[in-house]
Amino acid sequence: MAEVLVFHHGYGLTEGVRAFAERLRLAGHVVHVPDLFEGTVFDSLREGIGHAESIGFGTIVERGTAAAEGLPAELVYLGFSLGVLPAQKLAQTRPGAKGALLLEACVPVAEFGGAWPQGVPVQVHGMEADPFFAGEGDVDAARALVATAADAELFRYPGERHLFTDSGLPSYDEPAARQVTQRVLDFLDRIDRIDRIDRLDRIERPGAVAAVR
Image (cartoon, rainbow, N blue to C red; front, side):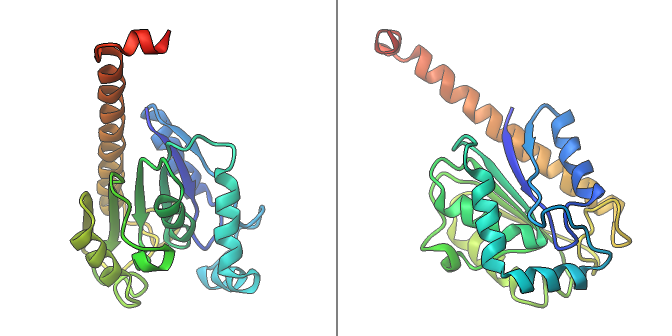
């Protein structure tokens, strides 16, 4: 199993985000879903983003960083839109990251330091004509990431909806969301397989048993 830290989008911690996290749990993964808005869920994205602006995007990142404290270093970080800010920051700067899943947003790598860290696979997902993803430079940041990182994928879906993966919002697109979910599950399964192989290698390596003793 993989262990995943999920950050919600600008509406807040909606039932759709909780349902997505539960889908990952049902597949056997450990999932943590902190509430970066401290219990508030907004009726519109404009209200939610306005709230994020009022408290500061830096505060959102700080709350996400605090949510990771006390959890294992070996996490996969998943962010929906606004939640990509803490997810990407932690994937780039917190040692031990196992991977990153950036849904409907992507920040230039330089925002959180230098090059994307080696050994940290990443996927970016977004709709081709989404005005937030395609119209505000996120897709360009995603292309640059894919061009420079050793293990990076960009998946683009037909349509213009933002937050198409949240089953509780009018913007939900079931066929595209189903594709995203399957690709996310495949990504997590790959992380889990690599971890199990690494553990077996350590156990079977000559001298490993003696070292453990």
